Length: 100
Image (cartoon, rainbow, N blue to C red; front, side, top):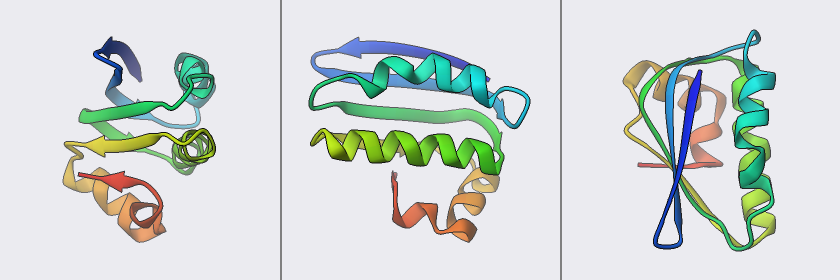
């Protein structure tokens, strides 16, 4: 999983590329660690090139959502491929995380 984080006019854009699974979830969590300390975060996760997420990846997204909410921020996931969106829908995560 490749993670690219950019800041633009008070908004944080995160580009996700590849597969998020048990082999790289720890590295992914380290990559997004700065997002857990921002005040009033406004974060957009661009999932255009994300191919897959495992249950451990879902857990990482849930932890991020909880952290963002606790700090009065916003988190949205965009451009999700149908096979990835299906995982979020089946598990109920699409009701927890804003997906556009």
